[in-house]
Image 1 (cartoon, rainbow, N blue to C red):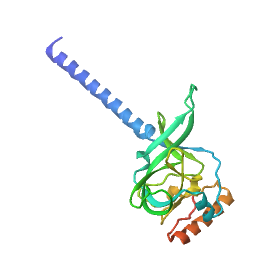
Image 2 (cartoon, helix red, strand yellow; image 1 turned 90 degrees about the vertical axis):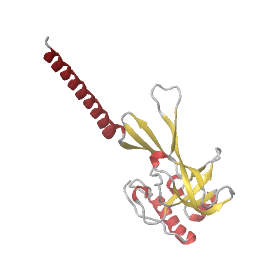
Image 3 (cartoon, rainbow, N blue to C red; image 1 turned 180 degrees about the vertical axis):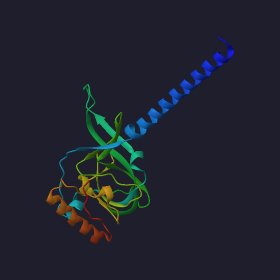
Image 4 (tube, one colour; image 1 turned 45 degrees about the vertical axis):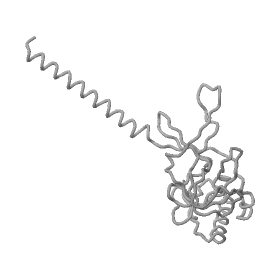
Length: 219
């Protein structure tokens, strides 16, 4: 084999190798874009304790705050536990620790909770990464709080020392003109729940002197 032929064959092999790398990289990029980073939602059912008015909700609450999450949902501390001894991993429980900046303390017996400081609260929602994409885990119609938006939240202290959102959507209300995915109702809600939460929203607006959103959506 003469020198030009050998050079041509070597160049051909290099080109084939580069094309293979491009195809692999392109495939990986497409997988990440269209599969791995895709978000779906899985809804779990839970028994929700209803509250008929603001007074009954406040009475059962350890902490009432107005404030905003400091981090995007994907960047929060998502906790998931699994049943042991099963071949396929089955989720047992889940929640998210959300860093919440306190703008105003409405009700509290905890001296460590102060205005302009942050507190870590438990939200009844989670996030897991699977080969087929990301899965958002949520109880009933609860949706996570959004970074930079303001909420009134009703919290109960847990044995772990953390404060948790009470009774799912009964424990979180949007302040101002942002409903979006954080509206508290969907088409499966019981009429009594809708009436109760609308009543509580109106009472929050009057008692705390703030605007609380109340639009419905289908999420």
